[in-house]
Length: 285
Ligand code: SAM
Image (cartoon, rainbow, N blue to C red):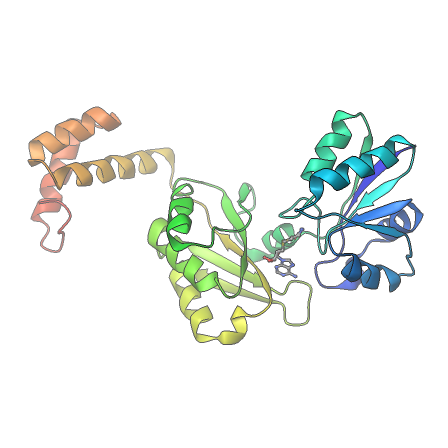
């Protein structure tokens, strides 16, 4: 029966290729992979010499069409990526969606995924999480991107390169708060696997001062916003109040902040007075 298998491969330790994955990879008619040279080398070490087809982000449309033709003719195809689970910050979505649209059977062969591997051992809450792929490379886009997660209660998981991680940690610290807990899971399943645990600002200092922590591959995890709804609402009311108080008389700022956020006008007015009277507070005055 024509089947498209989505096969996870190791993220570092070759022993993590499951025996089911090995069997599927040796039995299918062809394997779609990102880099044929890399995959040929890896698969040969398991005695797999199945035909390979190059499938990557720049040829997804054309190659998907060719693969679907072969699947429609009754062949079996496996999709792999250079490492880990296809489609997780890797190509494959175009093919899987088209296969499903044509009623072709799609079967996952699960295995390693750096994001899940990191989450499973990071010691951050795992009841709810949000995988956000790679952060943007430019600083201004990264700040805007981070602002989208200010109220996110789940643990954030992103992929990042060692070269950019300090900049990313600094931008996240600026937007989410320097005291947010975070973990860097580096070189998972490999010889130099390390987990760095701390706040966003701790980690930035640790990585900036240890060049070896900037080498290899890493996953960055950031604890979500653990405030409850009331706390989050009050923080938002104060944020709006602070913005308005910078431009308007306090009474007017409090009245407007109450109208915009639904907060209690009196409480906001008192908060504005208290902030104004605090000697070290320059934000409301
Ligand atoms: N599809 C893969 C998966 O399932 O994890 C991810 C592919 S993505 C193009 C590559 C990124 O995943 C790397 O830049 C790094 O952030 C992360 N990654 C992959 N292998 C890793 C490892 N062994 N340790 C830490 N992070 C890893």
